[in-house]
Image (cartoon, rainbow, N blue to C red; front, side, top):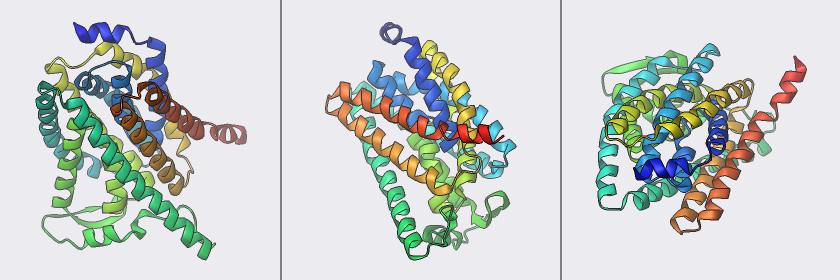
Length: 328
């Protein structure tokens, strides 16, 4: 099979190290790693549909570990995560059907990469603007802390005014009342993009919970992993039944990510919300540039950029842990 031949050409050590870095980023940002894993596997030689399918089982494994670790730290709103995750699954099937249709037309690679470029760029700009706004406020009022809560944004206040029944409360997230329809629509949108782009949902779920629902950043990180886990399990089954999962590559990535996720979760202890946001925005922007270079057939530079950005950000997350360990 063509996919099997291509996968055996990928160095297992490269897959393991990629998984290690993705695990660190998963634990720290609350993402499944699909935003790095899918384009990286595609760059390394797997067809786009197989790159998406192969990423799902690895994402499911490392997010399960992340959920367990974050819940022990009280960083998970299980009620919100399960509710959004259920409706995500509905969207995954539509997204998968769309990408398989485009694959038959030999258009999947181009359209999926275009979606990555647009979506990641837009979200990174929003988060960079958030950092710039905080910087401006901090310079004008030095007493304001870098860990300002996400619900200082105007969008959550407008969303919370929507009183379309049924209404539910999310006490763990500090949200007194929110329409269930907001969660349904948000979950379906996350699932649609997950199935189409091969991401677990954290890419959309994290900023959506912060900027739309007003969930504190650290709670959003842990809760998004619940969403990612549920959608990834469904995505794994769906793509596996279609024969689009390369299991050897998936297991090598999972072996590395299972180790890395522990470091990523530990690194969130005591970290400021704005640090998570600015590093997340930087990650999204670099991946968007990498995918753009791939689209322009500048493959070598694209490969180095996606791997290099993951390495640098992983180090930025892990290196401060030395001070924590020394303090103990």
